Length: 457
Ligand SMILES: O=C(O)C1=C[C@@H](OP(=O)(O)O)[C@@H](O)[C@H](O)C1
Ligand SMILES: C=C(OP(=O)(O)O)C(=O)O
Image (cartoon, rainbow, N blue to C red; front, side, top):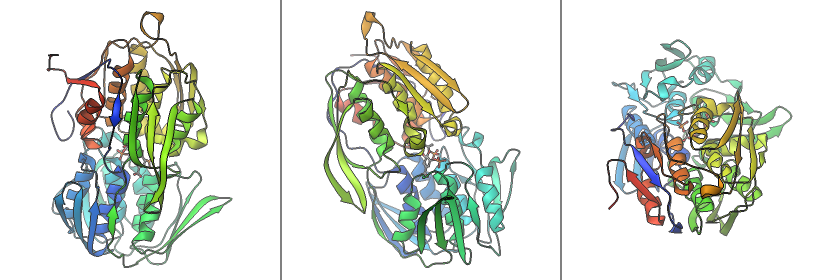
């Protein structure tokens, strides 16, 4: 059961060529940040292209609970009347962030240096995920948290009444940890400094600068040093949210493994901290090209064209690339199942603590579908083959558990499009958290997706 709806068993049948144009929704990471920084500004922020997935809708609801006025003016069009830095009111309800690690972790940071308390919870998936990685640095500002052992949700966060600035080196490569500390630093005096050894997505830094905060990033021997001057007055902005590369990954990868496919996925951000999968696929020999390269909102954007690629080879993914494709390893493992040889993915311990243990979830389903997978604490490998049908290759014919994880559900449904037999997932409901139009969009390209109670005509 997903946090916000019924269980939806789904089946993906082997399909003909996927063709056409796939306009994926707005970027989930940027959507969360636009709402939160809009709420921390004084005045009206206007947002177009907002992702209207459940994760982001939960953040919009949370911002209302903290006192901002958040209005939906039409598809993707939202306005936020903010309350200013330090202006959050104490919510009179539990903040339920559903399935969203980004939502709960960034919102905890945003309130941690205000003299208010709030209780946070989530769904069965989110309430298993580690939160000490957030409450530990927030305690350095003077915030206090009271929750379950091991620092998991539900928990109550009591914001610092007299916050102090913090200098913090992130212990794991996490943009959520970095962002929570920066957002807390907004309402602390002086300068808050975050140091990250591996570069992670930089949407928070870019957006804070866009809202008028004083923030610098320096590459040093220690790593990337990000310095924020506290207590700015953030200026409301007009924001156009770019389309999400992590959602684009699904139609792109489907086209690469379904014979005869040729799909255009327009307007995808190629921010270097987000585009690692696409370069990896090209290195595997994918027929994947960037058309109409341009800049939008200060970021590189292109139209991605993906064509069926039967000559792909397995690859050793550079571990230093992991952060720039951390959400794309599940769908990469599906492509790897159809590439000749071994794909090696190392330095990916973080996959064990996403909405699910993504290594375990994918390894279990792929093995059941006839694919060779090996794994360890922070690594896994997939040994694939381009063979189809009775020559060998991916048999399919299995039902896989999604574990309340949208990317696991979507990855197995893409597998079913190219396997010899259909692949089912026990619950496709979580797909709505990040990609609510996944079913109609993929069906429009030619996929054969069915809600399992449906019977073929
Ligand atoms: O900051 C963000 O928007 C996100 C950061 C990543 O998590 P971590 O920062 O925990 O790696 C990623 O997995 C998540 O989908 C979105
Ligand atoms: C891990 C993800 O999101 P979150 O951490 O926000 O739940 C994701 O979208 O793959």
